[in-house]
Amino acid sequence: MKIRRQKHAKKTLSFYKHNFGLRQPFQVLLDGTFCQAALRGQIQIKEQLPKYLMGEVALCTTGCVLKELESLGKELYGAKIIAQRFQVRHCSHFKSPVGGSACLLSMVGDGNPHHYFVATQDQELAEKTKKKAGIPLLFIIQNTIVLDKPSPKSLAFVVSMQMNQLVPVHQQKSIKMLKEEQGLSTDSTRRGKKRKQMSGPNPLSCQKKKKKKGPTAPKPITPPLDGKQKRKRKRSRSAGNTISTQLMRTTVSLN
Image (cartoon, rainbow, N blue to C red; front, side, top):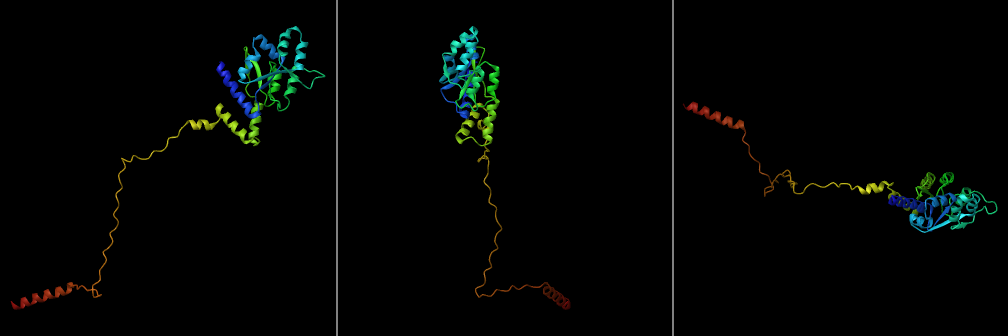
């Protein structure tokens, strides 16, 4: 199960790296619900999260989250102690604090320019985060940290960029590599199958073709030395018949 979780996290991280420019150290915004779930599941966030994301992690929260935990009383005192150990990022609600979920949404903004991860157990906050492209979402299931798969909004954003040809050449190559890793590309399946090449006939079974004899040329007629052609005399049948009849008549007369 752990190996499958690592592979899933690796694919999701590569998606966000190539398409939205996420780089180490990964900046993770945590709210009070995530800290409380980690406390119940005895999860050491500082130790386990960098191992799971396979890189350096900067854990941070906001002043609004700390004030919200403080206002909720003793029930979330342990979550407040955990959140105080993280970096406190300045938000725009310094004078008038808001709820933790609203503060994190404002920190992410449109397009997530600071490349924040959002770690929360709040379902409402998670749904609002998925409606924005390029925001990785972390949550806890059965005492384990899980990186959510890319949201439909993030996938649609990448597809629209490809269709509109707004993606630079180097990013197009990275998207192609990512598709091949996830098995979405048809080129990888075509490369796996080798086409059979047409083999020629067996040379031993082939006989040499017999040369066809062409029509013989007529022999040339050599002219005589005098330059005149000799005429061949043909004895006519009528002449022969007359001679034979005369001989018959003479023999009869003698008798």
